[in-house]
Length: 272
Image (cartoon, rainbow, N blue to C red; front, side):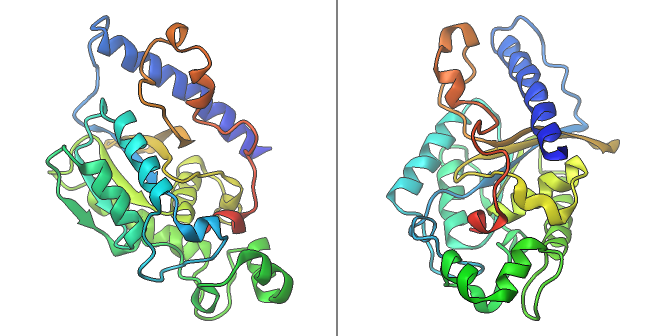
């Protein structure tokens, strides 16, 4: 029930945020953004062949975006063109770097690499198929059920959350980082960051749905960090999303910050 509450609450915040941006674009309302407020963008990389084949990549190198993934990233970059992204901080893994380069193109930004935004270290499971692990490895089945506990050499969700949060705080508090820093990373990392900002237990973060080339948004007041507001979870914006809703028709359904058919999914489906 708490997962459902998160999605409903975030959905209300999202539409309020979207309307405020629309009014600002039409110069009907001036921006009241304080220099102390930041909007953090948590972006999951685009699709890879490993996603299609249901392989678990973990921190293995050499996994780049496929053609569909590059198209997804380009579509997201176009949709985010009106948001003044002030910095791009990326996981050093290829699929995240590829996505970062597309997002940053034309913005005059240098991509900053941050190892603590890397995907979960899944040790011996890296390179294996989800369904085969589910059939043959009791340790994997136990980990999917409770990712707060792991065999030796495997990161737990609390460990991933701790390093990712430390990285976000380290970067977002830099004087030169700006009001709209984008962190390009992986599904588990985005889930665990959103879990932190919503008060969801790290062990239940796998129930959140974070699609390829989606963006989750968190507003933070630097003077009141404990009042961070999540305003989108796994949102896949369509180019032109800032148009008034009355002009968009069916497109609004495509632009929803919430996937209608999948508020709850197994953690093992999105570990890339």
